[in-house]
Image (cartoon, rainbow, N blue to C red; front, side):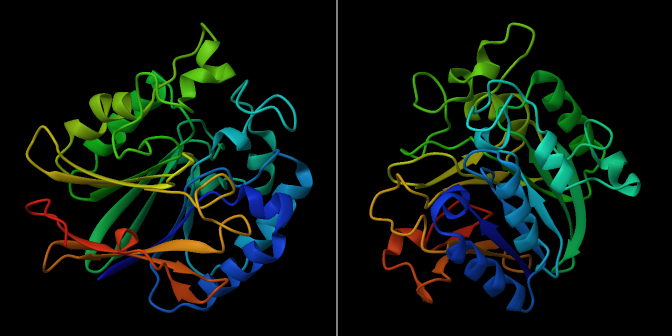
Length: 297
């Protein structure tokens, strides 16, 4: 059994409820049999140095490896300006990439787009983290990385991918990366969820799951699609920040516990509030997926 913790947007905690983020990360640190932690991006609200400092102190509590996908609130030309550029100076200051890990990065020494390797549940995994609205060049690099690791199961972690209606983000959907400054830079290319699916995820038989956040209103979504080579790909939206329906204290410490059972070929998802110390009351936030058929129970 491979066990992952999915941490959605923590931005409102750092803006208004730091005690909830502290509680959440202390809870994660105490858990046993956790193989890897995936943060879906928007670590910060305003991309300010003090926010990154507090975030780093929380991540330092963790005893297992983790991945961070930079969100639109984690990049920009100055604090409070979201994704007008891809500048990520503070993120890289507080979460630096060591020399030994630079080979796993799209840009040497930068954590914006990188992958992580691990063995969990007797399975070899590759967790690919791509920053908000990845460029065509980043997707080309990602295709190469996945193609060179066909013996591994692939998880994609990216901030903006699935929409509130459980479809891939595209068209006229709110909060598309193309609506931000990076999407208006003629020297850059920006890809939304549907484009990431077409240009990357759908092409490879070893993709198992895509995790994303960013989207408000429902804050949750599930889509299972068949890749071009017949594999079932689970795509999950997770977000509990301010602006999501019926949420208090910036998210109540909600996170997802995801377990992959290689023997049964299933993916089990549970949603838990570390602040309230209880599981989410709605059944839609808990399910088991048969990875052979795509059926949901």
